[in-house]
Image (tube, rainbow, N blue to C red):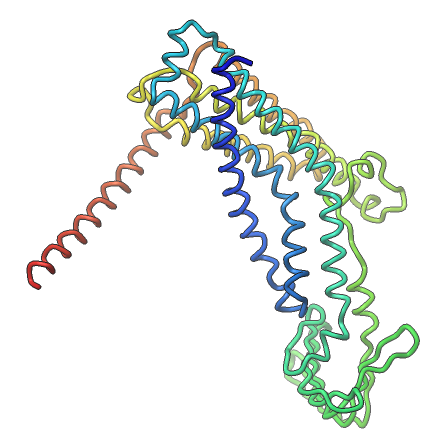
Length: 400
């Protein structure tokens, strides 16, 4: 590899790593916040929460890597163009391959990395994540006996324990059950305890009442001396691990078990997931080609209506949206599987045509003008706000 090629790769790699870290941090934070209820609702420790949070990273890496790459390539080439480095390289008689080669090597490495994570690490991380969530929800006994907490046990079923009494007894038991359509049941008992009957766990409530209300407004109150509320069904249901096609390994997707109930019901979902895994890795190469087609030429910035980085990201977002659309439809309409592979192939072919023909890929004129006007309006508005604050600060100093 030539000195110039190593120079371009080193600069692109530095920007790529920086963009990857920041993009991963942002996306990871949004995913983690969506799972904060694992601690708040299930009473789990912070260690379990961070373990679940760490297992999310492999699932977002294949999506984030191509976008970090397109940012790195477009930004690197745009800055080199601004500093007239691309013009100097062309004037020195270097071929177009001098710029394309290091970028494509970086894109190839990113594609291999995405493929390894998507097909090797992510399925096992998803399975481990499912196991942790299931085990946290299956730990129902420790969840129930927490004093003064109002917990959701199941959809439409809530339970609260007022206090813990000596001899493993519970006081102030409150249960709200609206799982049966059209009927709301409210249980209240002064005391109770958790009783184990073999493999079953029963909440035995003593000295309480049951309020039964229907949609018509009929209300009935039943007093009881003792009442047994079975908890085994919820604990077994919580401990069951349901593996979706996204959670399965690639080897399993290639040869699913005939006894898999989900495979029997929706076999197309397994094929769609397999097609997505075999095509998702290619977007790093596609986005690198798009960035080269947008910002790989030495030219004056006066010719561009929109900054090359914005243009490259906008085109990449459109291409990736088409890929997500095809993947989302493929499990219902198998013919969309052709589109799953067709989107990156067509996008790559169009980008290569722009590169080979020495043309610059740009947004349509109407889109570019709209984005330019929007940016100018925002800039003008921001400058006017800063001017107002500056004037107020100046007038305040004069008065003082």
